[in-house]
Image (cartoon, rainbow, N blue to C red; front, side, top):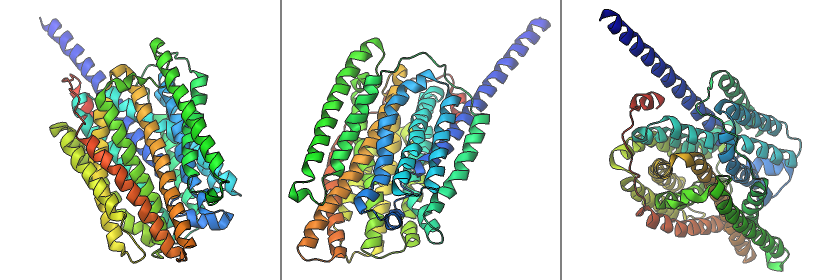
Length: 500
């Protein structure tokens, strides 16, 4: 009797030790992925305040300069679809090392770039690493965190996704107040290298790799599809468009991009019958997933478009210094970060719809506020609009990520993560290109009518935000159709708690 009790106690102690070890492993992996993802996503917008200086140093115009951001996001859109397969083929640790190695290499190249073309190529290399990191984080969360606790964890993810691009201009403004733009990359490089080394030593595998084939044709079609559409958008505001010289490349880009995407979708529908799709579109069988994708697309377009245009307005219209611009954008980023964990906890209690509806309304209200900016607009008005936008996005991102992926069957988690990441980046790139294109067209028209460049820029940016406001009305409507997926109780809640 005593021996049996001792044996039982020993067995229970062994199981407890195993659970504790698993909790510590998964918690460590999640936090390392969160920090690394914050660093890499920061680079989406950290250059927005420095673009004017870079344009001057390399003697390029605004259209070329905005490609430093657009090319970054476009690369994400092209590479992220492949990660759905890569995350099934390779271990967590090997994917982490690959992502941070690419990002670190790209950062070093950018810091030492002798010409604009090399800097643009460096941004593409950086983005290749970023493209791996985000789906890796999302898939890992869906794998190790219990359904009932995912809202809280996704709140931490929302800090990464929303705050990193929001505070990018602030960090850049502080650096540029005393140093050259290259120091932006010298600031990020040591952090990236430290994360690479720590991750290589600490990250452990939380999934089992499998031999899943990669369809090369699907990869090629995704490159031409997403790349063609974003490039076409970037050509809308070509300065020689009125003469007809810019219309043919734009039309060709839309035709090639649209045709490639149609072919891509048809091929995925064929390949998914044998579970070989690059992006398995059966995830869209859930109406909740589909609606969240639409809302995410509009939200990312609004966030990235605003982060690009507001610094331009503050510099070229209001004449503010980079440090002042960064400080004006800082409160919104901090508020978004502070609200994200709270919104995650609220999601676990009340679900998605009570959060996304006011979030979408606040986002729309901010864009409509910015649609009425002019050359006499005071800085406090921009600060207020940016804070309102940040609050709205804070109430959108966490519920959308959690409800969207929670509505997808477990075997499609990697594909769902890849689709969300792809749509985010395509929408961000398209939103940036569209906002800049509208601004450029309006600016050229106002200048031709005899107004000053300052007034023309203000008018162009106001019209761009007006277009964003119109698009945001679709987000408000879609918010009423978001549903919270039903989740079953999970016996491993202790593991989830430790991973948060």
